[in-house]
Length: 276
Image (cartoon, rainbow, N blue to C red):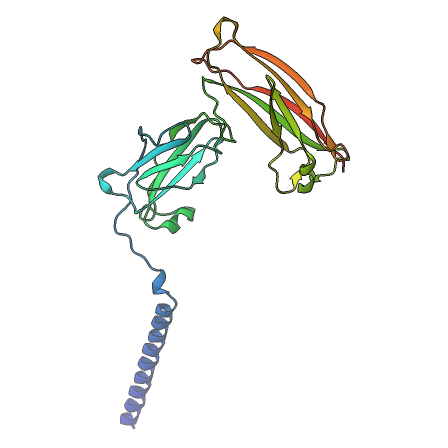
């Protein structure tokens, strides 16, 4: 009888052991199969903080910046990321080539702009919010750069005189959106010292009420003599008055600054009434 009991207990223990092993095996297999091995990458070295330099070569000109990213001891990632800020918000900059980086100044704000750079183990980490030091290096110290180009690419240096005409489009009824086709009705002309310059807008999409189009007239100071540099200008409304209009105007001024002194912008606003 005891022998049968021992035999029963032995079989019961064996069944428990087999069941436990089977359960553990299934759990292990399930965990392994839930991991996509193709998404696992291993990075063995922390990426060091790089330094960002200006390049004082031909690529650093009035229209372009030249930069170089250097990592201490070569401890950087294979990919580079460059950002700029002029108002406290950092935005990505498309890098035109590597290792020397050329950035076109057109489109950047006039005046001071700050840049920073880092290196990446893979390009995808540029979009990760908080990457590890094995995925992306710390950002470099910010580097101050100066642009003497207005947003449309017009130079404003010590040698230049710039007259800025701001056309502000406001609907007569106060409607919130101006359709793109309406801007085809806008036509103006700038006359400077008897030279004529036609003005149209570059808007190709619908714009909000109160939108602004800026036209920049630029000339160099040249040789002024003792009497300064005199400019007389007329802004004439040639719009289709069934759709929009603005008051024509005339201005004149004399610039006494020489080519070693920065002359501030001469800026004039024109309220264009849109009839819709």
